Length: 166
Length: 438
Image (cartoon, rainbow over all chains, first blue to last red; front, side, top):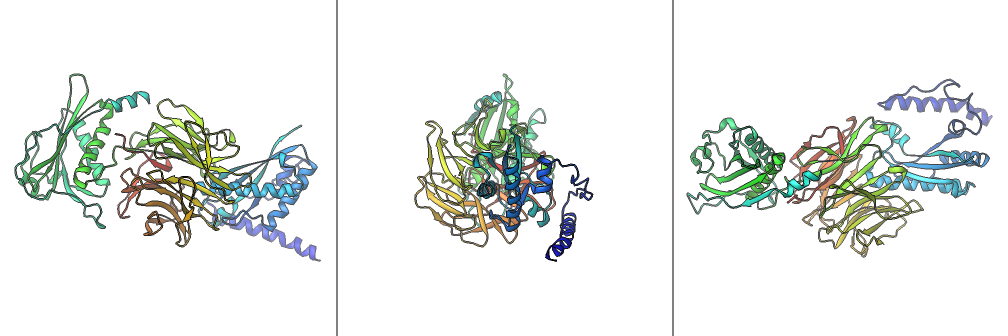
């Protein structure tokens, strides 16, 4: 019953997030809808697409914070499990900030977010020597607009799979 | 670039070599007191400099634009002029200038020497006292005509305000183009009025926060070249680049010490926090100045080199701190609402400019080095990153209006009343003002 409630709730949450994004953003990208568009059918297990789509390559932060939120912990736990399964990958964690800060401080803030993400993954068994970090501060927004709908998406740490060191 | 610099040094300045025309002594000379809070701009007539071509009027036009943009002068419309200057070597008809309330008058001439160089002369007159205040002549290559104009504007500014000018200076900044989520950033340099833009990097690498050396033709900046964010030095004469120091992690937020011998910057720690270091450019020795488990960044020296102002969030939010040059006595000085960052010490030593975030707005403000006397100069959706004119009277910063798509450069004087856009070819950010070129 509980599971069912959770299941029925989630599409609504997805829809709301999509609406928020549409309402706020100057640059609108078509929202993927079908399983094919989402890549659900053709993501080979262990591929970077599998990681991005089925695990989730990014977590989000509160304003001026590098605390790993509960939702982010869930994502990182899945990342750690996946990286444990596909142990040939090294990763680079990119720390980012939104544009509501000054440039140098935000570079430092992005570094702190990347380090917090690395430490969480390490605590879940990902060897530290497989993890690099870099901060881009506020220099690489994914969402470009001047309101909160974009800023929440830009305060992020993205786990980028590097060379599948075969 | 090399040729350009040589010609700067070839510029000869012969000051005070022109005869004085004193017709009436004893009246208080015209002057501007810039320390007054509310400055009424001084009405000044700047006549077209005589020459056989348009070069004369071009030079006097740049002089006029500099003085107008300072906010301290109100150049009078040329259509109101009564006397047409035909010989700048003789005294003008002061009555003709007094009647249009020109408190000061500038006349001049530009001619060509036998060797092809330009000779530019000007005289500054106090019309109500009926006397010449200054007269100078300059020889230069024609390429440098704008510099001569800025030097003349500085001479007029200094004679009438008692303070050094800031027109013969440059700005190094970041040129921004392309969409916001794929922004291309290039190092660029231009004159302080936006003329003569030249690019110093090609946009392959993300570059940020360029700053001038106080003593050499050199800048320090941050680059993400090779996905290794590091502080670099760039020699403007040779184009030679090198990364600063051999630090294990990311370095950022660089500035020179006032003697040009050190670079001060932040180094990212393995725990994700940042500390402040200096590197001596000769010995290459590095010294750590802060050791907190917090973000310590954006260091800036006092002009005497004795103290450093910086940003830290050791108290929970970004605030401004001051410490000795050896890292001693770290003391918080900002206590207003919101957070404070990007502190920059004025070249005069009397003020610190900063960015303040409060109530969803970004302001540029100034405070004394002990944190007292905080004043906001401009506020809005996003204003960031002040840099001081070398005389400490004007700050430049970048502003992005909501929905504007990209930032632009502005200057504002210490009253906050005289705000000026600096027109650049593309979006622009991270300005840093050079010292006077001399």
